[in-house]
Length: 184
Image (cartoon, rainbow, N blue to C red; front, side, top):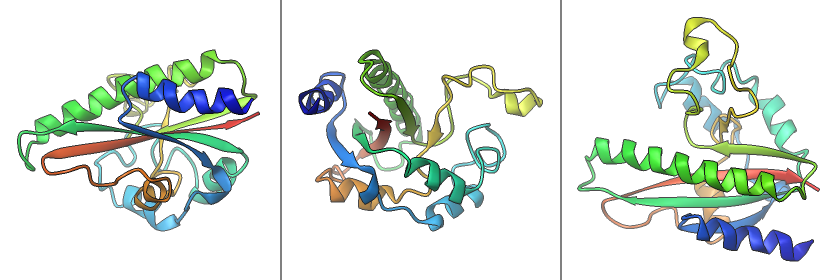
């Protein structure tokens, strides 16, 4: 089984992740402070998406849920920008990260070696162009919806550093993180 897990890192890199590592869930640095960033609407998605606060649920429940998993696949994508104010490039980078994240997620699911997985990415769920929450409807694709690492109270900066992944990848770049937790 260990070989299969190490192959996940290689596969994530082959699927265009820039960096990847296996993580032990018990070592993930959780802090409710990071969830507060969501609640302060720092990304603009608070109360606008089923997978964002407040609808995703209380942070203590989410942390408890995450701690019910054993290991995870942590990966990062890095995207070049024209300059540090290239907002359009940042959005394109996030959209590209979303495509890579979905490919890696489908690959992890297709291995059929896990009893359960919990996929987490950056920012709001982007599966639908417009979240059903905005029109007071139930999520159209609950099996495809993904919450963010921040909504789960994960200190992303500490997490990537703990696993040898650089948080800063050079001038005029933007980096995004994905984390897929799993149970055997």
